[in-house]
Length: 237
Image (cartoon, rainbow, N blue to C red; front, side, top):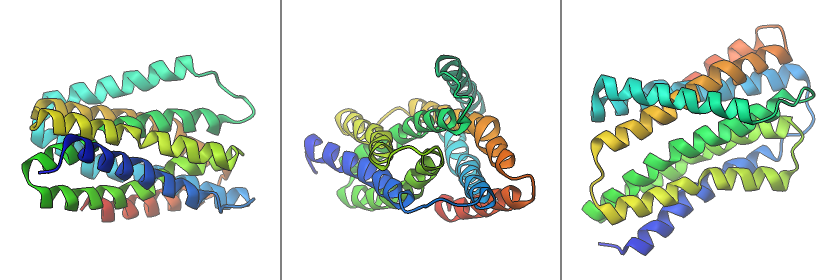
């Protein structure tokens, strides 16, 4: 059995390096037409929608039941509404606000991932390594998903990298908590998952998809949403 310190380091690496590498990939996106940007943002929204529908919410239901799941969804939604009120609107660049709120929701989502990593290492080392690798691969597209709106908002590459890395920070924190407490309460993990799901669901419907539509009035954003949704299936199953 690995030490709590070692498990925590693994958690931080899985989260911060995984999302950070996704952010680095987005740096190679150059100036493009609105049609291309629309489909790219649509893919982002579709991917996140798929992860919420087929990974976060089903797992939350299994661990905590329907009412715990509904509570988490509502709490996550109200958190983003609160964040919207506190984060000033940029009339010249609405994607900036979307990016900041998305970073919050992804950070929340990464906490239960860390809890799973930490508790799995305390149960059996092999499971911990396998789960860590799976989470690392899973975090790559999440980092890219977060970085794309930032890139479209003309945020400097260094700031994009920093934001994507910080979004993975809760994975390490969750790994420490999971290792320290051993077996986390299923109700608590369920609430974390549905909380993240509610937050993401709100930002997808309120910001990502409408902004994708606003960039180009044609079918490209809808096609992007469907492609992103299909892409998410490969990571959810």
